Length: 103
Image (cartoon, rainbow, N blue to C red; front, side, top):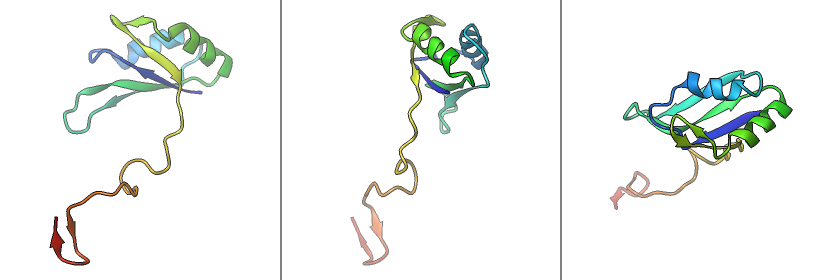
């Protein structure tokens, strides 16, 4: 199961997150999200646990608990929408080559 973890402190390490979840079962991976521009943590990440019942217990026990002096939010990760990110049809403005006008 893929688990979403939010409200992590900027100094929280992957090993701290792994240790918190490992108390409830096997942890396959931990990925904390880093801002590509600043290189700083964004304050959230994902934990993979192969056993669903262990993952559900971890979610139940760790949601609204403290980790590294922060009250964290833990729930099952939702799939990323197909139309998010680059290449999506989100509109925009700017320069249009088709009519050579600038907005």
